[in-house]
Image 1 (cartoon, rainbow over the protein chains, first blue to last red):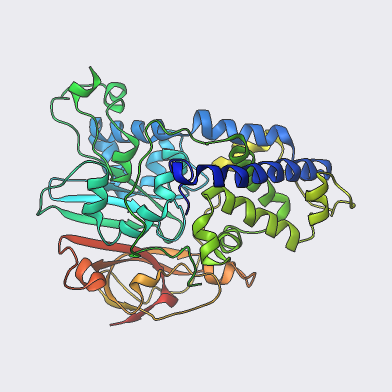
Image 2: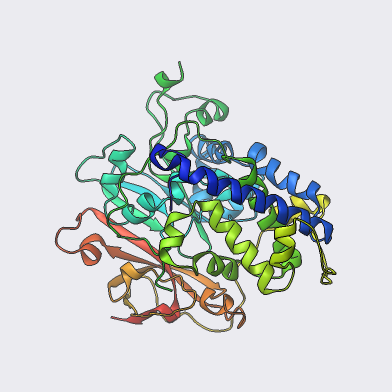
Length: 211
Length: 219
C-alpha cells in the first residue's frame, strides 16, 4: 500500500485524493447519522479508546509481569488469553492470544502478510509500517533484512521464528529481560518494554536508556 | 483470491520505514473512517471475513496505491451500498435522501466498552476429531479460489510440520461468502525457510501460518 505519510515525492498527488476522501468520509458519517445507523458519540468513544486507553502500554505491563512473576509467566506461556485477562485486557482482535518467549537461541517476529492482524488489546492499533507492503512482503522471506531496517542484527546462529497471523490467533512476543534489572518493580520494568520488542522488530530498552 | 493483498515473499517494495513517535491516526478522517467501520458492523450485519474480502477484492494496482484507511473506507462504502444502507446519490449530496432500512440494533455509547471487551471469539464446539497431530508432515494444498481465503500463496504446494492443534474455528472461506461459519480444525503449521524460499533462503528461518484443515493434506 502507498506510503503517503512519509513519501514527499507523492505528497501533492495524495493531498488532493485525501481531500476527496476526507469529504466523502464526512458525507458518509452525516448520512449514516441522519438515518439513525450510527451515534456520533459512540464513534467518539471508539476513537478515544484506541487513542488514549488501549495501546502498547498494556502489553508492556503484561511483559513486565511475566519478567517479575514466574507463576504468571508460566500461565502466560501456557494459555495467554486468560492470563492477560487477569490484568484486564481482552476482546476485539485479541480473542485468542498466544505469547512467544524470546530466548538467546530463538527470536520471534510477528507479521500479517494478508492484511494487518495485530493483538489490539495489548498493543493497540498497528503502526503504518506493520500494515505496509514492504513489511508484509519481506518479513517472511528476509527477516534479517527487515531487522536491519529497524537497526538491529541478531547473532548468525539465532533461529528466527516468523508467525504469519493468518487466522484469529494473535501473537505477542515476550522479549528477553534486559540485564541489570534485578529487583526492579513491574512498573519500572514496563518502562523498558517497547512496542517493537513485542512484535519482534526491536529490543527492549536497557536500564541506561532510561536515563 | 490472488489479489494485491497477498504479499508474502513479493519483491520490489523497498525497505520498511518506521515512523518515529507515530500517532495512532494521521488525520481526522482516518479516525472517523475507523470508527464508522467498527460501529456499522452491528447494524450492517456483515462478519469480519466479509469485511476483509470487501477490502482485498479490488484491482491489485488500486489496492497497492491506496493507504490503509482509504481501503477500509472503500470497503465500508461498498458493503453499505451492496446492502442498500446508502446510495451513491446520498454520499454525493452529503445527506439522507431515502428512508432508512430498519435495523435491529445500533452501537450506543453505553455499548462500546462491553462490545470491544467481548470481541468476536471464533472457536466453536465440535464433535469431530482433528485429522492431524503435532509432528505430522502436511502439504499446503494448491488452492486458487477467486473468493476469500486465508491460505497465503507463498506456502501453497509446500511441505510443513504441524506444530499445534489450535481448536475448531470459524472457516473464513465459507464465512466470507455468507455460506455460514462451517467451523474447521485449525493448526499452526511450521515451514523451513529453505522449503519456502529455495536454496538461497535463510537456513535459520522458520515461518508458520495458521491453517484450517481444508487447506492441508498429508505429506
